[in-house]
Length: 407
Image (cartoon, rainbow, N blue to C red; front, side):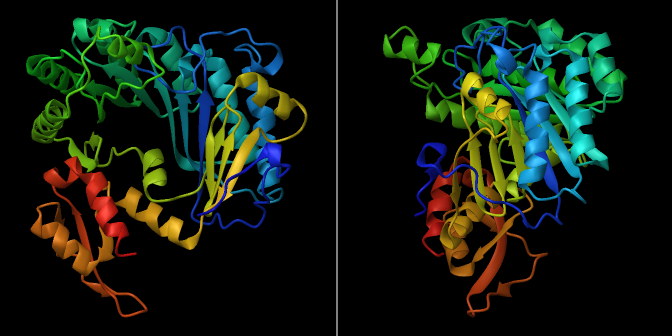
């Protein structure tokens, strides 16, 4: 195993000059601010908006712009930088920033690296944080895709999750975005304690009825350090039930597939041609640079992560340094394990040891893809191409571990 290095070790950021970026580069931009913290959230987010200096909401754009320029130099691409193929603003709530500031950040990425002519530029948004005018400004500023945090169509479940929006706000926000020609996606959460099967069905049908291009559905996890975690610990809230969550997932796949949204990644369904290209970069092991506190970067098997607290992160940027907290260079074995762990999630399938796949197929976890011929490695190892079955998607972690035994 590699030993991660940190800035406190005196290592700083590793040299990334000369990285192979011909296949493209993507950008993730973390906006850590939220109006309120949801009860289930354990992301790196802050409801305090007035940190000193470049860590505040009002000064955050300038800090990001400095980091963008620093990243260009770190990659050693002063003359011919690679264009960003995809850009994704996540959080937090990115739309806590005015649309003019979000558009300015996109322009800074364009100025420093360039954007591909068909670049996908996405922002997450809470439905209550946008208006028709703000979405118009985002579209004019280069955004092509909006991912709305719907979570549920049940007002009762929304309150359990501490979400601030109402069901009607989702419909209005998606309608505005679609009228502007923006790609649209909604996130759903299933398995909230006390959620009924009927409530989950309603959420799925209402999401479809919005006419969105893409749906992400995630099983709720109750993390120890969250408000929901504290309630569960005190016995005020039941824990999640894995069997119920499996039933909810199967129902999601049934209803979304019948509506023309096919699964392309374990937690994601899309109409043909509307898959999230940015997230495919992650699952295919591509290269991306992460901007903002706590953001992660991957370049050719080297992983970097930024300091999590906005103050510490902004102080390093102001000092002319990347906000890196630590890094690691993955070994050949670690990269092979990660490739399996990521590729196995995709409906396009993955190539692996034929014997291992035969055993998984016997247990109903994978199905072979006959259109891809069996291949052999340089060492003569027989390979085959397969993808997870519905049962396999529910047991993806087990399938991954069993494939690792054959690496």
